[in-house]
Every structure is written in C-alpha cells, then in structure tokens.
Length: 624
Ligand SMILES: *[C@@H]1O[C@H](CO)[C@@H](O)[C@H](O)[C@H]1NC(C)=O
Ligand SMILES: *[C@@H]1O[C@H](CO)[C@@H](O)[C@H](O)[C@H]1NC(C)=O
Ligand SMILES: *[C@@H]1O[C@H](CO)[C@@H](O)[C@H](O)[C@H]1NC(C)=O
Ligand SMILES: *[C@@H]1O[C@H](CO)[C@@H](O)[C@H](O)[C@H]1NC(C)=O
Ligand SMILES: *[C@@H]1O[C@H](CO)[C@@H](O)[C@H](O)[C@H]1NC(C)=O
Image (cartoon, rainbow, N blue to C red):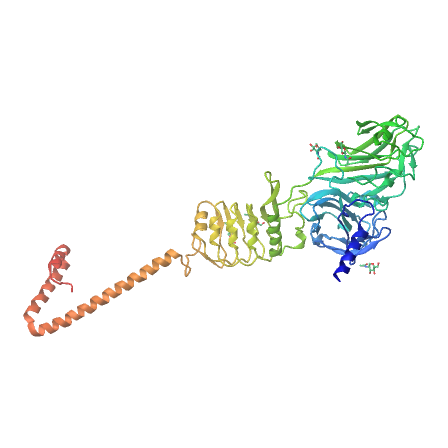
C-alpha cells in the first residue's frame, strides 16, 4: 500500500515536471470564477477556475460579458451599494512573492444593463485604477492588471463604489511571476506596483494570452492586444514562422510567438508613431520588443533608428541585429519616464532603412500605500462585529487606504517613523448601532476621540477603555449602557470631555473621574438610572465609599462602647444605692451626712461651675 502510494506520487511528480531540464517548480496560480458554484476548466487551454470564494459580500449572477476578450466564464459577482461602498476578495495562504493580479469586469444582465458601472479597484490598499466611461468598448479596459509584491500571505483586492452603478466582477487571477520580473533598474523595488496601461502585439489581428502562445507559466499569462497597423499606409505587417532566440528568458519569459510578427515603417511615412492617453503627472515604465524578422535585412547596419518618447531621445541608434546579436533574436529595451501631460508618444525615427517593432508594453509606476497597524485593523473588525455595524458602512479592506476610500467613521494618522497608519478617531454617532462595546476597543490605543452618541449600544462600559491613555473625548451619550462607570476611566489624564448622559448607568462616579472633571474638563452625567457622588448629582445612598464605611464602622463601635460604659455606670450606681440603703439600715447618721454633702455640692455646681468642680474633685467618690 505504502509502496503503491509512493510510486504514484513519484509518477505524478515525474509527469508534472517540465520536459526541459529546469527544476523550477510551477508558479503559484489562483484563478477565481466569481459567482461560480463549481470549479471549471475552460477551453481552449482548459485552465482551472476555482469556484467563487473569499469575498466579503455581494450577489452571484449570470454574466453579460462585454463581447471582447474576457475569459469564457458564465457568472459574476456584483456588489450593490446596500452591501457597502467597498467590498473585497481576501485570499489567504498566498506564498510570499511577486504576482500578476488581474481582474476582469462584467455586466449584470439587469434592466439598466445599458449602464456600465464605474468603480475603483485597489490591491493591498493601493488604488490601481479607476474605470472610465466607455470601458465596455475597449478590450484593454475590460480588465485591470498589476504586478505586485505580496509578503504577508494574503492578498486583498477591493472594489470601491463611486456612485456609478454596482461593481460587477467576472474573475480574479493571482499568478506568480519571477521575483525580478520587469526589473527596470534604479528605483525598482518591492514597494512599487506596475499597473498595465497597454500591452500590444504588433502586425497581427489575433488577441492572445501567453497561454495561447504556450508561453512559460512564469510569465504570468499576459494578454496581448493586437494592433495590426499604426495607421493607414503608416506601416506594413511582417511575420515569420522561424524560431526566435532569447525570447523566453528570465525574468520575463516572453512567448516566442510575440516576436514572430512586427510592423515596419514605409517610405511614405518613415516615422512609426504610437500615441496613447495617460493620466498626467505619473511615471511610466515602457518596454519595447524587437526581433529582426524581415528577410530583406541580413546584417548589422542595415536598419538603424532612434526612439523618442514624448519628444526626448530614449534610445539613439537602435540596430536590432547588432544589439540582439543576430537575426531572429529577441531584443527588449526598457525605460522609465515621467509624463506631465495626458499623452504618451513613442516615435521610432529611422536613420537607415525602415523602423521595426514587435510589441509594446506600458506600465504606470505606482508607489504602494502604507498599511494600517494590523492590531488596530483586527480591533476594528472586532468592533464591527460587536457593534453590529450595518453593511452599508462597508468596513472591508484596509481602514485607512486607499486614501481616496477610507472607512467611514474612522480617522487615520500616518506614523512617519514606522510608516504605518493608526486610528486616532472613531465617529459612529447616530448610526443605529445595537451591539455592545467589546473590551478589544482598547487595542485602538492611539484613539483621541470616540463618539458613539445616539445609538442603542447596550451592556457595560468596558474598563479597558481606561488604558487608552491618549483619549481626550469620550461621548457615549444617548445609548442604553448599564452598570457603573469603571474606576479605570480615572486613569485617562488627557480626558477633556466625557459625555455619558442619557444611558442607564448607576452607581458612584469614581472619585478620580470626578476629580478630573472638576479640574476643567466638561462632562454630562445626567439622565441615567442612578449615578451619584459628584456635585450636580444626588448624594450616594447605599453606595458608600470605603472611607465612608470605615467612618461609619468606627462611629458604630464608639456608640456601642459608650452604651456599655453607660450601662456599667448605671449598674454600679444602682449597686451603690442598694448598698447605701443596706448601710443606712445599720449606720444611718453617717450615711445621711454624706448624702447632704453630695446635695450641697450639686447645688453649688448649679451656681458656680468652677467652685463646684473643685469641690466635686475634692469630694470623695462623689459621682459614684
Ligand atoms: C443563469 O443561466 C442559467 C443557464 O445558463 C439558467 O438556468 C439560470 O436560470 C440563470 N440564472 C439567472 C439568475 O438568470
Ligand atoms: C531594464 O533596463 C535597465 C537599464 O535601463 C536594465 O538594468 C534592466 O536589466 C532592464 N530590465 C530587463 C528585465 O531587461
Ligand atoms: C516619478 O519618479 C521620480 C523619480 O524616481 C519620483 O521622484 C517621483 O515622485 C515619481 N512621481 C510619481 C508621480 O510617482
Ligand atoms: C458626538 O456626536 C453628536 C451627534 O452627532 C454631536 O452632537 C456631539 O457634539 C458629538 N460629541 C462630541 C464630543 O463632539
Ligand atoms: C446633559 O444631558 C442632558 C440629558 O441627556 C441634556 O438634556 C442636557 O442638555 C445636557 N447638558 C449639557 C450642558 O450638554
């Protein structure tokens, strides 16, 4: 049995390993068919699409695809605004690495189907793209794609409503690429994201994925938009069946077929000009692909051209055969440019012969956003559950980024020493919250202000609130809080405003809290079940402080002692009287004299205190 298993495993490994000598494992690949209930394999490549999972909300639906290049998937998931302004796919257990992340959009077959939704897409908190109206008519706009480094084992892909229809997602692909893929030299790093702005294959009419080209899986299954020509009479297509050398090399592993078609400029129009619309004031990384596939060019020096980007010389005197080392050999040139205007223009200007080009890639270079401290994200998620936050508030993805779409009710601050965002304010007043306050709220330890006024929050005030030392404003008024005010709130030395009015709180306001408030902070404790103990509130009844209890105990003990002493006196006196009566019976004269004396002294005492006293002190056993 064991042996059989082992043999099968060995066979499996053997079968899966590529026929080439390369020992590199297959790259990680996760493809999700949104809205699908079953895993699927779609022709022609029979790629595996996982059934829908890892979403934060939304509704599955049959898909209407813009009839362009979308993968042949039948379903989608859409996110109506009632499900919140931001929804995400949070995919876990993604190995640390460099990835091509691609999202295809769909259309919900609804009544208002004519309307294309417009929304923003972010990956790991960084805004990748904002859809532009008319996207359904442009094949390179029916998806959004970016190269990102993922380091924490998860990837969060979020869709942010902008009030123009419901985001509808057809598919999500997370495909591992080489760690150095699209390395462009200085400035390149793991904090950068490269958004695909254009990816063109020239001199062909066929749109192609790398998979269709049987490209290396480490290439990330790029989609190549076909441009057969740059314009009428501007160029001529060229193609070849010959093999191309150095095409599928690390780190980018381009498919060989990419270099088997090209365009060449003409006599009437010597410059080859490609222009595209871009967002202004961004940096773009431009990748140009060449291979000499024209049979008429046989050696070095027969075709030489300059490459200008937005008028500036980017690559002078490009001689493809010379630079690639041979004919039918791939040459890739890359450069990064800052674009101020709205157009990016690439011009190939021949010095000798005609210009040639096989493919063009343009990426927008985006700096990744810093993220929110994980502990605080988790604390907010705990708060979301405990308070029963309504869906419409969203609260998916990162609380603070993208900066254009922070969570509502959350104020963020960037710590420039750690490059992490933290939460310094929580404003969820009048949101119809019906839950309770979790003790984990104290993990938001940078909070300066909390306003949860005007909800129906029940339960007690967690004493952990007293550990948020930066807290200046705490407004929990107009809720249904019960119990007493925790002693710990007395530790909040920065507290300036404390509003607990209109709840069902009871008990004594802790002395430290009361003391602080009397020193200039503003507060309101009115309209509660029974708070007491500071000026303006009723005095505390049964609820006594420890000091009061000691005082009362002491008082009671003293009274008891007095009582005992008094009764002893009374008893002794009674004894004396009894004894006197007995003695009188035997020696009356002496006793009578003594009684008289006592009587005299008492009289004089009424007349003159001082004398009486002296007399009394002198008198023998006068008071006994
Ligand atoms: C989706 O399409 C399938 C067949 O393709 C159909 O059976 C099903 O009723 C459709 N569902 C909806 C919600 O339109
Ligand atoms: C891109 O160009 C830079 C220099 O401009 C070079 O260092 C780098 O290796 C190139 N990248 C690739 C993948 O060829
Ligand atoms: C473009 O790149 C330059 C140099 O690397 C950098 O200083 C600048 O901030 C970048 N601009 C944008 C919009 O990213
Ligand atoms: C809290 O929110 C309520 C209702 O919006 C507002 O009236 C109150 O002033 C806020 N509290 C503080 C301390 O700002
Ligand atoms: C204090 O709270 C009560 C009841 O909630 C309210 O009527 C009153 O206006 C508040 N006082 C101040 C000074 O805000």
